[in-house]
Image 1 (cartoon, rainbow, N blue to C red):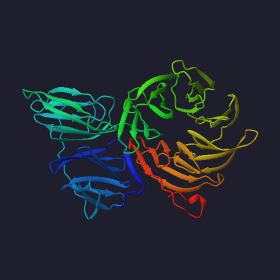
Image 2 (image 1 turned 45 degrees about the vertical axis):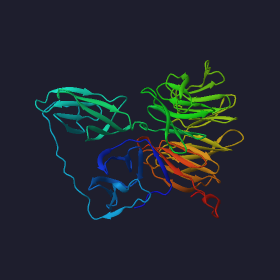
Image 3 (image 1 turned 30 degrees about the horizontal axis):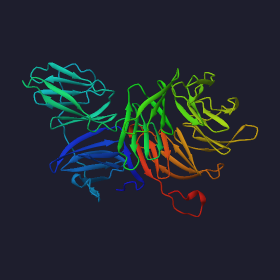
Image 4 (image 1 turned 90 degrees about the horizontal axis):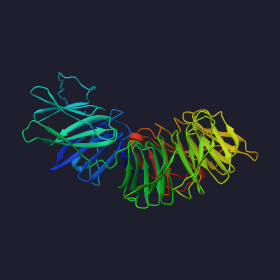
Length: 481
């Protein structure tokens, strides 16, 4: 079984199953994220990107992996954290029979698991928290609500701890029995909560990686991908992030723009805000201005010289959705959902538009005289803008659901939903040449590149990071490996 040789690291992501096993006097937490297995021992984490994984089970201190081609492999748990990882081809997949518990009680919703601890039944719900019942009489003695948000897929109990496979990642609860044995207390253990979230966008600034998710923003060290600092709130719903100097501008769908000082990445702090009536879906900085996609309220521009007194003007509002924006010294380009593309000049006058895109237009980018538009299921459409400011469609790249674009040098990187990231050479924009495909762990909403890595935001699949390796070849469009 091969592990993707380009794969470098994974940050965050939802957990879908969890088990705990004791190996060499240490508890090893084993879980599944989208298309892969994660293993945690003490402070060590190891992720195995297995994109065709169908099912897994722990048996006899091994992890058995069943793939979509029906092949079965195993790996010894005590060898997981070594340098030489060996997989063994197996003939059978173990079967584990679990006793199913049914209680004669009224559930808040269909439970994920019913666990036993001391004299208590613990009922785990997907979204409605945890109920605790006394075994002797089935009296309900307490209810525990997880903070922020939860959608639990699976739970496992071991050594007075409950391990939850949750949409926001691994969550651990400590159990404590009261002095008279008639009370069971639950406390949230935040040891492994640092990477929780649902990544949607990424920015790279010097040696920092900034990741936005439904909770806010997290800042990681690019050298070792360790979390440095974060700002979280249930009211953020951050869609995009752009960075200028030591400031990060968060496009919040439920608010507008929140401005974060990242000069001390260990302790980022809010230092300003721009409220928009329908929130902000995207932002782009050009010069001293930030341009804002204000959804059905249209396109906005704000001057950034004084963060304590930010002046905002509504450039354009036709009632159509504006969900993406890109600016140069000459043009402001907007992705207008099902209304296509609109282009404004530096004087903020609408100069041209193209309404016949073949799908919902999410993102627009420009290189020289060529414009690239990510149009969802309609693919990526490529245009030339002529001297009289008219758009001429010259090519199209078929995709599953193009959401985000990055143009770097002669390459176009496409965040393509469930299809992952596509890379094309665009030296000749009339005939883009396919280079490589990185599959998605879930649904790729955002993509970012720098000189070293390709980053993709996969929602509940987390952020996946791949090495970018160049090799020399004869054809100019085939030198990205």
